[in-house]
Amino acid sequence: MIFDPAPYIGDREADLAMASLFGGFPPAFYEAYDLAFPLEKEGLEDRRVVYQLYHVMNHYAMFGGSYLQQARNSCERILRM
Image (cartoon, rainbow, N blue to C red; front, side, top):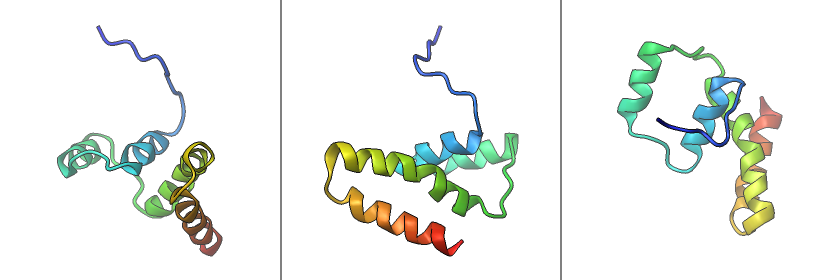
């Protein structure tokens, strides 16, 4: 039995965005996921940036460093959408 201590009910793209934020999974994972549960491709990369921004900002608040530039880059990209 597997117990998830932090269940989430929301957009599955948020989970995938978080999974890809720090390295992600092998390409085969995403290919298999897309075969089983296809994602809307239009705007997918833009939505991923939006979903990741909260986590990048949170990491900046906790750890500082290069996360600030990553957050700035994400904000600039979002403003261009």
